[in-house]
Length: 341
Image (tube, rainbow, N blue to C red):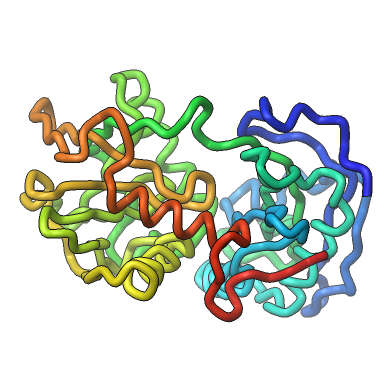
């Protein structure tokens, strides 16, 4: 298979239209058979449910070329499960988990020429999503929906290497108690846009959101879970009902326990503990782990022991191990690597 003529080494993290995408429609209480299509445009009513009441959920995962030449995805079954939970929470029809994985397979296979070669630092980003497409003027769920999957080749999230971030403790709340913070809904990300633009204008890379009830406990950023390393080498991740269950974070927890033999604690993490942490990272599909070197709490700087020059030693081991698993350099736990071709 001949690859597209793309400068893989200088690819940015952005959208590039590929050849095929998958579309399935829900109408009269059932999903149709679904198919790959050429057209990247969507035609819908001006009164579509997604436009009026933000009825949309999505996922994000990647396809990789491993060192033995296979094209694989990483734990797509968990993305399927999370989309199912997201859809239920927004009163949307569930798209079968098996069909979800099959749709991902079809899109990646049809766009295999866009999958970056091994060693390029680039990957194929895959975006499954679902939205209400029928007209809705009263506040209620739509009656018809569309499920789609597209993909785009992307470069490394950090051009020029990974550098520790400076983040701020935000005065905004990411999610309400008993709200939708635990699902991957577009509305959660819409409400974070003003906060992240404001943080960037103030010179920060990201926000740290606290729990909205007491504002004493760490939750997550606008699009990633936190992972901390204590000064005695324990890995700690915040626990909360309003945190999105990151697949990357769950995978890193397993790697920490089973591959590196580290003690892991999934518990409430209080803001007052931050000064005692040695390392901090943001976990997500895009960058796997983004290291944090400094947290600013309304002018008070909390400088982590790992510093601002490089990723902390434990975080680096976690990153290297998980990316090694994804790229086929390290043996993966059963079911983690889904071979497409």
